[in-house]
Length: 143
Image (cartoon, rainbow, N blue to C red; front, top):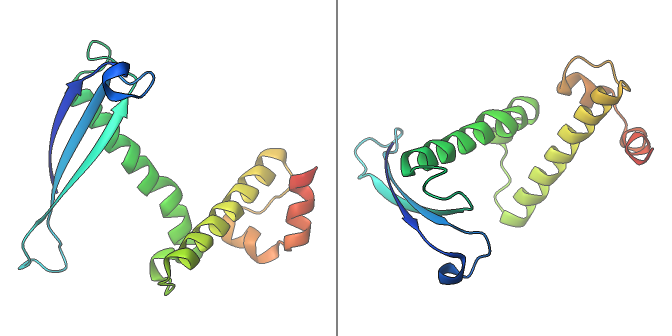
């Protein structure tokens, strides 16, 4: 994947967003590794920030954006995939897929909350998941 970015300084009045001082456009040239003969696709994403150009230069904005998405991909998504096999999930309807993501995130949150409160001794999310009953988990959340 290759990226190009362009940042534009704006005022809150120009853009109509209170506290917005820069807009970042990121163009991504994506090559599908599973279909190398296919032409690359171009994606453009837009981001807004309350940081001024003096606080954060355009290359720093791009680094922050990449870091943010890497954190998401390597954080929550990784846990969902390893613990729940999310990438192998066969659900195709968008509403059902969103509901499952919500339930998986809820389970991850419950596990983290119980570990932080010292309620569970389960060493991992999969072992906690196998031993936890829904009514028991909810009782601990509501305390």
